[in-house]
Image (cartoon, rainbow, N blue to C red; front, side, top):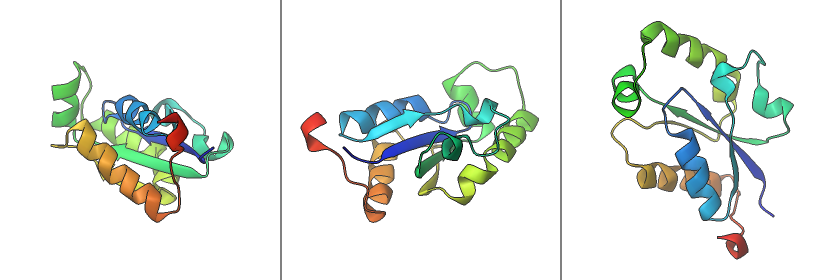
Length: 122
């Protein structure tokens, strides 16, 4: 079984989609709502050694989801993600990237860290 991977990031950055694609590729990937948590490093608290951080600018967030908030909310979410960003395998801005391109980049970063998929489950 591959090492579990936590996918965190700002709202509408593509966390759920990425976790789903990575699972289809054989990774044990889970989306964590760190941006809503007051826990400094939720992934670490839950035992995840590999963390992927997805980021997106407000314009991209608004294209992906109807939101009523502004730049201050993005700033707060990024602040809450600080510990995860500091130890992330990759911190990827998803603006302008389709989900497969995001998954390809993340998978390459995971493989560089020695995290391999379980092809039996892919």
